[in-house]
Length: 207
Image (cartoon, rainbow, N blue to C red):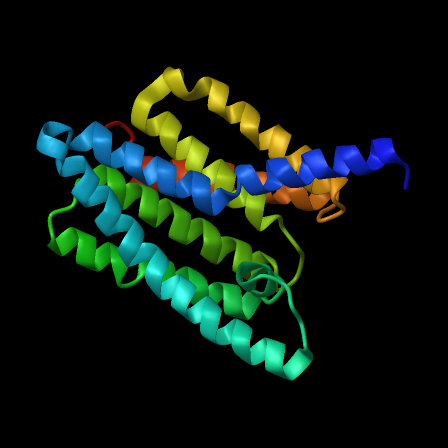
């Protein structure tokens, strides 16, 4: 591999890390809180609470499961990379992301916009895990699509530019040989159908 190819791969890796769906989703959850509760910094409370309740159980499980896999297989991949390769583990992580977060946030009176984002992400992750038992869909693209489509429902056409992140991330994942074009398309299809379904079926398609 020549220097030009190495530089292209470095850029692709940088894009993949910078726009990692877990990071983007956390930002979208913060924006959902801001659009629903702007006064006196209340939105900060809701955003932190949502991220904590959704992410903490998932990360704890990922840490425990990864430690077990590393001991058994000597694999040094990152926590979530290991889970993505194992649909059953990804399914468990998806349930831990949404439960108990959704019930807890509902009981605490969290603004419905935040609940919708968490629910859409949970259902998307569950769908990816189920599909990946037979075929590999891109988790990165599915979750990023979910996050950015959620943003569309929250703020409308102001978010249209953000949609360009989807092909940008897809190209970077393809360049890094993480996915085929078909796997990337499947991830996009899951995120693009499930997210509108969650927002529209529950009658909460606008902030």
